[in-house]
Image (cartoon, rainbow, N blue to C red; front, side):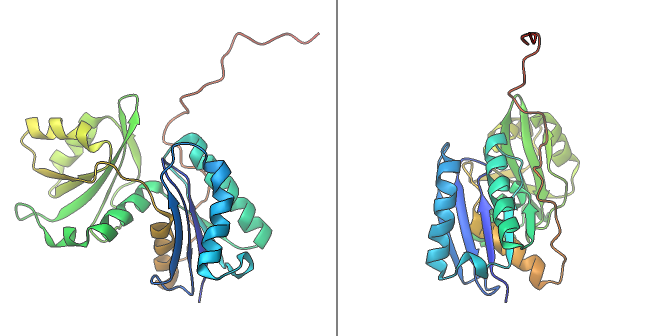
Length: 244
């Protein structure tokens, strides 16, 4: 059975999980909510997770990493570390979108969501993360965690319009939910909000990959960073020093 090591550093948390023998009941996870210091903690957390699992790095068959969207530095740190480990171990690496990992965490922690239809309509899960500069990282899912849209960076008004045009009711989750809520309320569009503060968890990432593997799907999603917009920090122009 497959042993999976999963890494997430894409937002304000840092976590490593080891799923042993393809069994979702055998997950050893180290998780910390930290805004900075991911690079300093990450490899130590890899060691801690391996020790908890009783496995050695040579026993890992598949590596996984969150590929964004998220903080630009955090996404790069996680992917660089995962690529290095996968290359050294000569094992495959799969990248999974951060918003999909967040959806999996919501459904893991609130399994009763699937049992609560609103106004006779099937519910969808809308992950909405405040991306600053008037935009929200947004993606919708069904209540099994299956993506129903691509991850996008959109204005709150645009997301509200998409929800209004849908035949489904929506559960909004994440730091961007409060930015969408007033628009939906003013337009009398039904919705619910849960878990405004939400961080991805490598344990859920490992479960997603285990599900892909056990279902016979070929887990070949790219492990390249998923950037939905340019970085906030840009190289300044007009200040170059001429070579002598």
